[in-house]
Length: 87
Image 1 (cartoon, rainbow, N blue to C red):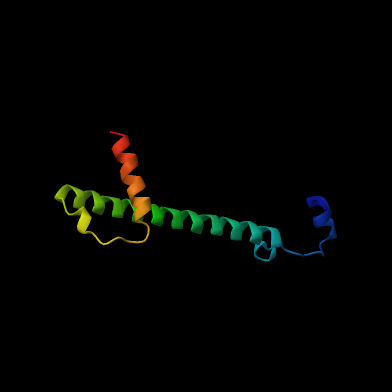
Image 2 (cartoon, rainbow, N blue to C red):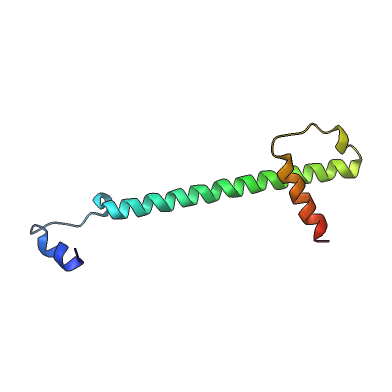
């Protein structure tokens, strides 16, 4: 149904309310989900970069072997490898 048909079918005096428009609400929900996913990705990237910095500092101090392994250290090591390869 086109816009003209929707307007013609609406009762006289009807006001469009985007808060009740299913399509608008679905688009807003999809946008909010995409933003939340991107924020989660950024937080994870920041956590990995922080851990990579920690591991780099421990390596420079010669105490890396004494560091307790943490979940996600593989991603931090990958980050260190990428930075070392870029030099």
